[in-house]
Image 1 (cartoon, one colour):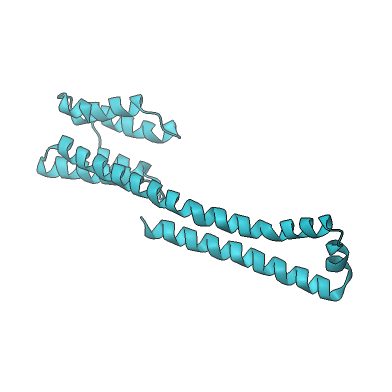
Image 2 (cartoon, rainbow, N blue to C red; image 1 turned 30 degrees about the horizontal axis):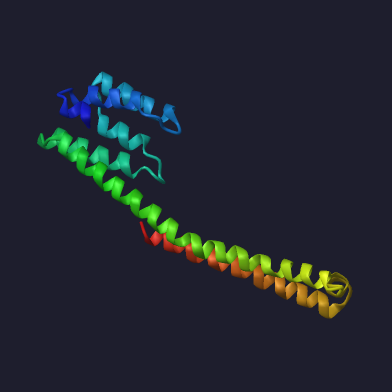
Length: 168
């Protein structure tokens, strides 16, 4: 953005920006920098480098590039709007994640309570493990309890994932 407002050409600004940022996979952006230096189709290179999940920024930048190249609109203002939109999306994602931390922690705590109950029973001198593993009724209780525990964890995880995807 600063490179564009400083008067650099869009291709040069993009190549310099790519060389100055840290990304998880730097090799993914090298073809874009090469296309930008050579004056090729940068929008296509951006779309080609965008991963299916999490590549919204590159897709939006490619659209801005295409609009700027086709219509001649100011690329700097378009890029600023995309950056602002992406910052808002990330802030929203972090907010949703923070709000879902409570339900996640509660589910984990509830999943561990049966083990705590077994420890407490053993501490009081009872013998829960011989009952659970040694009698048919105890084994049935163990299987039903484990099934309900795993189902509760699965259901809570499903609800949290659905809430996260609905927030995007």
